[in-house]
Amino acid sequence: MRSEFVEWLCEQLSPMGHMSSRAMFGGWSVYCDGLIFAIVVDEVPYLKADAQTIPSYTAQACGPFEYSGKDGKLSKMNYYRIPDEVLEERGELLQWARAALEVALRARAAKVPKARKPPAA
Image 1 (cartoon, one colour):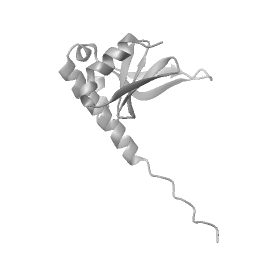
Image 2 (image 1 turned 120 degrees about the horizontal axis):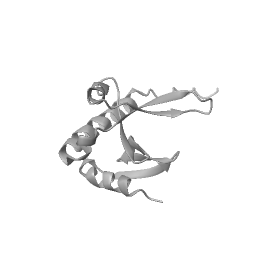
Image 3 (image 1 turned 180 degrees about the horizontal axis):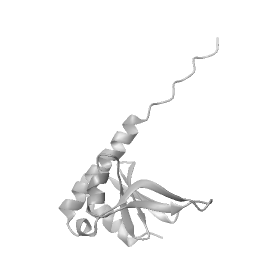
């Protein structure tokens, strides 16, 4: 079942590129041109964050997405809640989302491909 909120969010962010979403673990993952940069859980949107962008979220008293694992331990992800006032202004929402997409691009670039083993002689 599609989420009207996720569809609205993708529509708002469409100037960034091709937006898509997929159901995941009771929520949604949001992609721009095939790269995940946001999640939505219980109709609450979160954007991918890193050391460069987390201060913007904490300054707005917006924390990370947290969940309880099978062992009962609380885990945090590097996805931070979008401030409510940002959701109300499309231009500002696009700024925050573009920053999250940059985080995703930096994370992808930082992944070093595994070296291939030379063929056996």
